[in-house]
Image (cartoon, rainbow, N blue to C red; front, top):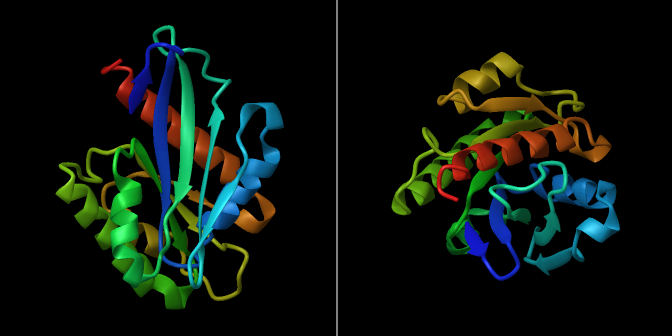
Length: 194
């Protein structure tokens, strides 16, 4: 969180985290398309070898003000492949909230677990933990044929009882609901510090 007193803004950072090709980019592209262009900046894509890392920011208008200041949310995705570990650490610096995008396909459970462990390790190195940090989990790709049951995903991935969503990011199913929930969680946490 960064407070710009001159502009009366609070800059907050939300990172979409998860294994490669789980739907992080698709989530941000859908959000970008649905936002009023006057409330968002351009979508910036930094290409990696197999996947894109995206960044854009927008003014969150529905929440009103937080102690007289306008919140500005910066949304990022991280590259999911293991060899981008250092990039993920850099993108996580200063994070205020996490959306963990899990791939619901049965054969991706190991990738989901590895990514979640990587996230928790990176947070611990920064003095945080998912146990107390604002985060939500999104079970994406629920429309595909060979997906894990939600009960199995919950048991294996949601060990801290975070709010979870069943999503199909390509169709926008539960994408905006996921965003609204993480924004609410972040605002509740930071109101104490503003």
